[in-house]
Length: 64
Image (tube, rainbow, N blue to C red; front, side, top):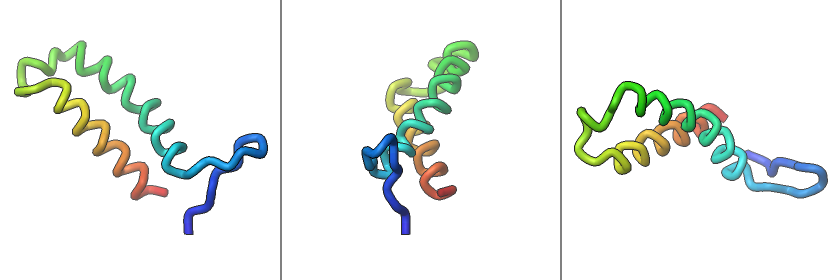
């Protein structure tokens, strides 16, 4: 069973930690999307970014 994360005596749900790690991974990926100009290949860029964010979050959730 997944337990809470202890941050200096404050218990945080593991999902919040997963979101933190996802954001740390997603920010460089988003910068990379800007460099390769991903908007040329996708229909709706923001929807594509949300999908990638959820994929990263799911992979982190499955890993831990």
